[in-house]
Image (cartoon, rainbow, N blue to C red; front, side, top):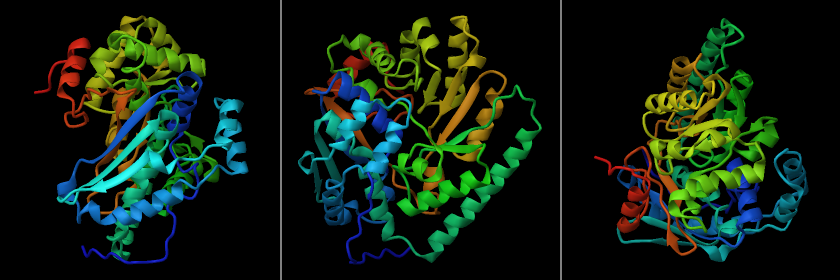
Length: 413
């Protein structure tokens, strides 16, 4: 693969503030209404620097330009009207977005002599939390632009065509099922990891047109508006993590976060994320009250089959019919893995699937494994104890040990 860095006329990558995941809006609304004074610190990390075709430090200058452009954007009137039409968006929140503009002073970019890229975001969470998806999408697009040629796009199209064939096959198999078998449902979760903006739009539109009953949703609000799809998303780790530093006991932080979500959405957007301190610790807090209030759970780390079996057993222990609930899987999936999980759990519980990198960045080039995570809140460290080794991101070993002790989570082997 030839790396070509070309100097061209500046073109902004992000041209709409709707080009973001829905859960950024839903979390921002909850934070604005309940904890508007909260301060957050976010750190960028590339988990696979050694696999990169060239140093990420090389894109620093272009990234700075893109961030300057991003921080000039405002929501357009038709975008605000679209948000007003979403049943869970309150009018006062959309009024706030009418005035919203990202502040450039809250985000800084640096590099080191090893060619590593560092991005730090510090500021009020009602500002800082909205940067993440934009920044990751920009980094990806700048990085892959130097690696793009006709052969890459041809390979991407070949792989996309195979995905369409798979969807047709799954649709045909599903057509023979009885009406009581839950449908196979897939959503695009790939904005932050996309090859570029245009490719994501092409992939999502192609798959949606091919099998709209299977691929009916996307986490990307801009694409949902443009393509007439359902915007998908509830909460991310940062929402749950923030409560580790808010005015509750650390041991009660998960319950406080879930309670705040219920207070904000009154039964809507009822999918809870389970792996901030691990599934076992989550289930100890997810009592009958929450199990009845929430529609289901989202898997984002660890063995999905073990996790799903635990969820079903938990519902049964609480005398809740698991078939009335839904499990959403979103950890490193492709269509084959999603279908296999659907087949395993059908008849036991409803399922849905969010697929990211494999939909929007399956081009035959090793994708970047980049994240931008909340690491401090109100001057205190916060962390997640993922069910997958390597996903924990914190430099404070003392706090990590304390978090494990409080939630009775064993050190990973």
